[in-house]
Image 1 (cartoon, helix red, strand yellow):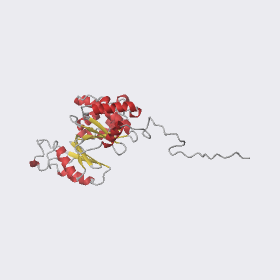
Image 2: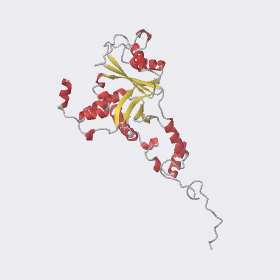
Image 3: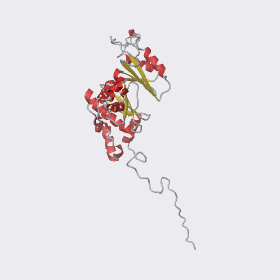
Image 4: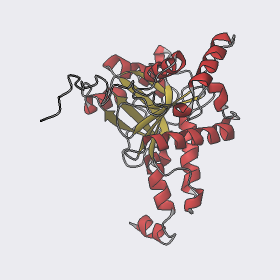
Length: 309
């Protein structure tokens, strides 16, 4: 005779394989209980992005190594901020970013939140603010005065150009730098607006009687325009080049092979950034730090051969 079957049946649990309540995970974002401190910080990170009027440095990096490249970029900014402008590196404790958010327990999070609410002083804006972009391999570090992005990038690349040993390299994952003196909207009027402000410091502008240039340079620099487009399909390359060239006085001639100045235009989504750099931009591998390191590691005997070509 078969044993009587039990009327009690096991019902599948709603939130798992059994009826036990789910555990709170200490690591990762899934299932983690977040304090208002955590939520506010996440919202602040999401809100970070480019704004009209920004200045800074576009940085490309190895795909999949954006986090490491961002750390390298922050370290380089700290080093050259101190070297060129006497800026002391920020204390991570003051900014609330210690790189170990996943390991912060709830109690310490609440304490930090209370301390932040009771603090009478608002946190000061960072001189360097590295940002992750929506595209792979792309970073941006927003800078504030007294930092000059062009001066800083030139110094980084010129210093790197003299390095020979791997142990002296400052990065493994960073590729190209593009300094940005000013950012505007990526529209026809935005391109004209940012061009007049940026170019007026280096060139005599067309129709110089309109007061756009405070001091006319006696030496008429030759120039080349080098635009770059990322995630943007509204403005056309040729139209942007023609527009910028039309704003420069005819005394400045175009020289694509060996210009005195190079006008860098970087259009990303709805933003247009611009800067003017020196003639060694090409010799410095277009500010590609990785390529500079590679060229420095080659035997000196290879340099004269290339020069003869």
